[in-house]
Image (cartoon, rainbow, N blue to C red; front, side, top):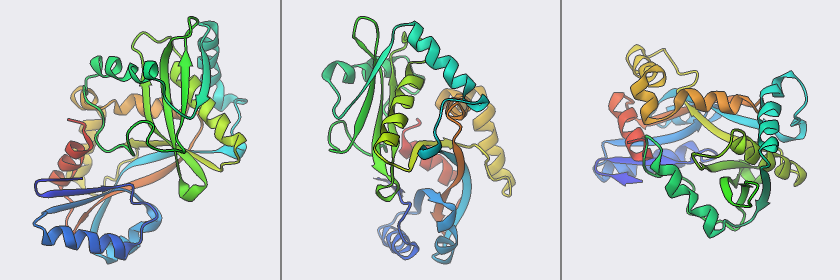
Length: 271
């Protein structure tokens, strides 16, 4: 995405440092003062530093190792409780390869009750345009869709990850947990190794830069920051699935500063 003097490349894991460095220099030659990368994996950081990128840890990604995914044990007690509540409310779930019109209409209802009343701008893609996408759709006792979660392929063809989560504001507790659990079980049966629940912004943030660390802390812990994005609740939700937490970084060519973070949030669609 490019807007004004900022270019933002999303989904750059697996790309080489020299390729991303060439992209950044090309964008700088086109008068872009900021050339942002996100998310950057730890194994990419040294190569990107050699290319001239300035990097900072700004979150952690929750990844579930599917061969060992179980609902048993103390670590999954919260998840079992939420799935039990969903079943007591007579919710059911199916995993489909397309999204029906009635399920798609849930998004406008969901956005209407969100503090962030717009769709995230840098998702992988629009509905039904990825042939390999799968949708876990949760329905109530009357058969009406009340929540859905979309998974798309990634991990160099070794797994899937969440791209969208939509829930009707009146959906009973446990609806989203039921959808995510269905996707995890489905992909495990398909032989995948990993399933990404997505990054939790500002979790385990780097405080080696006092000013940027303080800005991230204020965003993560303040009422205003959580009005822009539900930082605190997102991490608690993903912990229910006992994921492995992997650090993710943001990068800007030559110098990362407070305005880099601001531009990244703006282009991502947080405000």
